[in-house]
Amino acid sequence: MADIHVLLVTGEYPPMAGGVGDYTERLAAWLAREGVESTILAPVGQREQVIGFGKWGWPAARKVADIATRVGANVVHIQYQAGAFDMHPSANLLPCLLRDKFPTLTTFHDLRPPYLFPKAGVLRRFAILRMARASTRVVVTNPFDAATLAGR
Image (tube, rainbow, N blue to C red; front, side, top):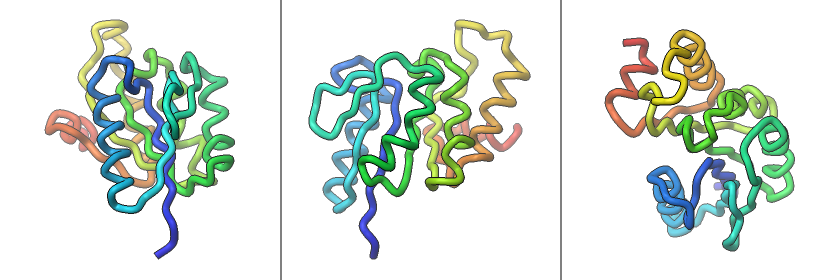
């Protein structure tokens, strides 16, 4: 089997508070136990194997492919939760930006409408479905998200 190196892209990571960050930290630990190397791309890079990108936005999104190449990743796994990425639409476009270079997995952590900008409605739904369709594979963490992506 070829060596696998996963770039985990997340909008939050310890020491920041948040469930997505905790999930990503545990996933990286599990991957390591299974012999899979990972690098984490997060807002703050205070640990080994964590690269900090600062505030999420278009500049950070455009750098993901370059960072993945630099660290030797052959898979990009996005941990998506809108609030973790400061509700910036560039996170939704990552699978489109990466699809010609890397297989892209997206884990959807919470697709319920956010309390900020809840009336985005159709536009928000389009962005999420486009993100899912452009991803090589999709993981959901709850039944609501599964139903949302299935169009129910």
